[in-house]
Amino acid sequence: MQRVTVTLDEDLLADLDALMEKRGYQNRSEAIRDLARAGLAQAKEDEGGNGDCVAALVYVYDHAARDLAQRLVQNFHGHHDLSLATLHVHLNDESCLEVTTLKGHTREVRNFSDHIIAERGVRYGRLVMIPVAGATERRKHHHHD
Image 1: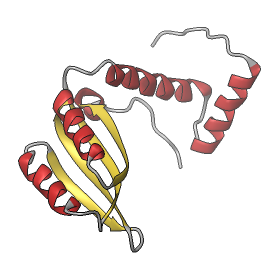
Image 2 (image 1 turned 90 degrees about the vertical axis):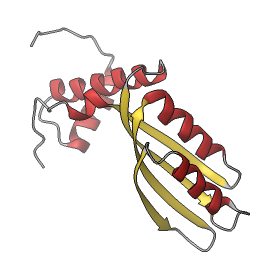
Image 3 (image 1 turned 135 degrees about the horizontal axis):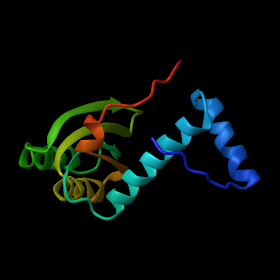
Image 4 (image 1 turned 180 degrees about the horizontal axis):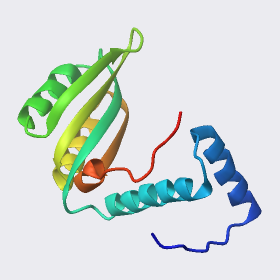
């Protein structure tokens, strides 16, 4: 490891310390390393990513929307190579939440997710992608609960 000196203003340092306490970090270095990893992964995702990824697609939809459930099922059958598993939760009389795990090329996963989120009747959707290298990388420190 290399030692790096970073200058932070008081407000940012206070936010970092609050995050450390909330998440149980033992020191600032651990917190900053995790934040840097997350920021780099987000930057790679924003650039379009060129490799494979694992992802979680989370969306809420109106289960009564005309033919929506059937369209969703057809979409997933048409992309069975990307979809690993789906958790379905009934939130209330009108809404269902689904969390689908996906695996494949970053571009295909993003395109598929964008298509699902754009379906008429889907009220909310968000994709969280993790590069495969990042998902399989061993953590170099331990969190203590």
